[in-house]
Length: 138
Image 1 (cartoon, helix red, strand yellow):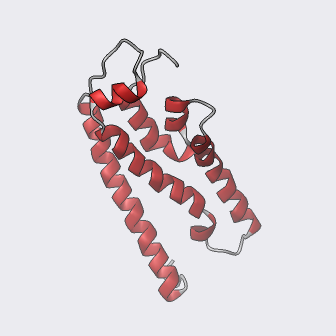
Image 2 (cartoon, helix red, strand yellow; image 1 turned 90 degrees about the vertical axis):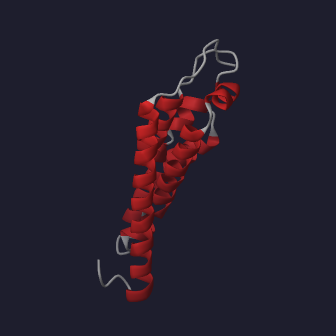
């Protein structure tokens, strides 16, 4: 067990901006977390698929990374909305410090909702375009 205090605002920030690379999982759980490595390999795997199937639409080849991005947006909301008491019980049981969320966390959560909605609507729009028109509009 680590005695280092895990900051909820920093974890939410890492999840929001670098979550598709697993930065939040590495911060919270360390290098031995399997889900962090899955997030991290999603971008190189998508790039490999794009090079392997170069004539396929990027929407399909970058789907693993887009899925990782959507999961990270959702998890950033879960981490940020967790109460300080539950956060300390899960991530800081032996740190000796108490968490105290500030207004910066609220701004990050508002940004997460907006960015997640925009990304989800964009993915749905592109998916419907490919499904019904074969990609005629993009």
